[in-house]
Image (cartoon, rainbow, N blue to C red; front, side, top):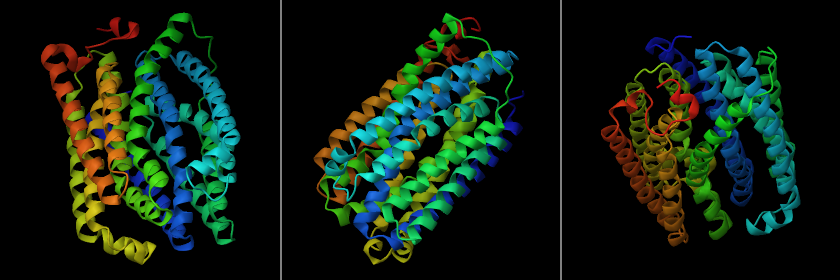
Length: 429
């Protein structure tokens, strides 16, 4: 399958539109929740989303692993290997999802107390959907690796429609936070079923020990990247929920919810470039031009979002959520700036990971540690938490960019996939 610029631009545009639609629907749900729930209840509902995003570290790890190996096997036209890899990953995903479900259910009373939540039941309900959420991530990875951006885009819309329709209906009927959490769980079931219908069932063969070793070896830096990413993207909300009073935590949750939009929209760029870079690397072709174009697109998104937040953020949030959220233009703009820097850093790290270059993943973990330390120092107010975010993300972006250019200076061949290589990469370079 060709990975030329026109195909990638078209696929990225389709995926970007789908993510805008999906995020728009999710924001519609949150607007509804902000109107129907008190700030403390809204913080509880947002906590369920945050926990889901923490589990996303596992889901996206599975998706990226499936995407990279599917992309490589697609270059080699090996459908049996694609099927075998997907089946192997799906079994592990189901086991991991079951484990997460058991942990959430067993620890629900403790989690309720730690996060000052009104009920333990939302944690249990969210856990029910975890096995389906993780298994579908493998299917999304296969679609991504095949550069099947149209069907991949459809999965995000299906997930949003199920979440919004069920969540709004149940909250309107008086089920509150529990109803919103049921909406989340139903959306996992819906997207799992949709992905199953899209999968190509070609049959596979048992993976040999070398293939399993390659997958497990690659899983380590992927897990490191995603763990760092999830800590950075959600740690501030958890700290705010634990240390701020419930109403203030609800206001911070609204700022974070809107401010993170540029990161989630940037995933359309990262999702498009990741398998394309892996395929180019497999063929020994240069791929840095993809990275630089992607960084430019994400930077433009960030500038536009920061400007919009500074000019209209408080006005819009005040009218949408209520007067409690009306005075947040400044904090929202700074939060969006921090998120934009993080989005660019994440794109650089994921690009290197698509080439099986791992150092930048560990830089991401370091950024997460710096951010966490700064957040604890500034845990007593919204302004100090956001200030910590801006400082931490600026440090992270500089560190990741420095690592990228250092690797290019030390290894001119890195543009075609040099650096740390897996056994599969060594055969092609």
